[in-house]
Length: 104
Image 1: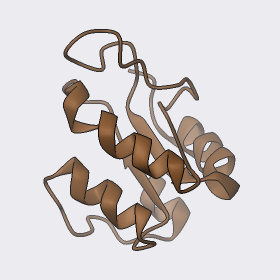
Image 2: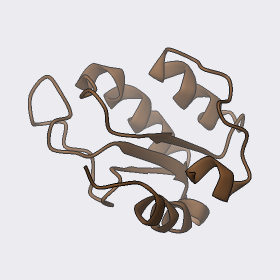
Image 3: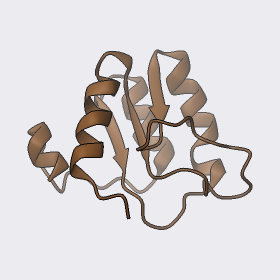
Image 4: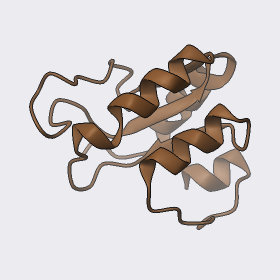
């Protein structure tokens, strides 16, 4: 439903590595990355890539708009999903994701 509201094809290309997904954002190969909650992500799958994306002007939060908590241990257990997007569209995408995606 979120992809349809954004006018994006779904499913798109499934790239398994989180690092490759962030790299695509860094070089302008995409506008956003949404990770819907499922199993918890490991910290090391996101920490370095999020830092690089933030350095080039991207913004990364969870689906509640909270910063990603890398101090919670091995998993991102204090966050609900992830949203990485260009700063100028992040708030709009976050609002839409919160409207469309279930809390549980």
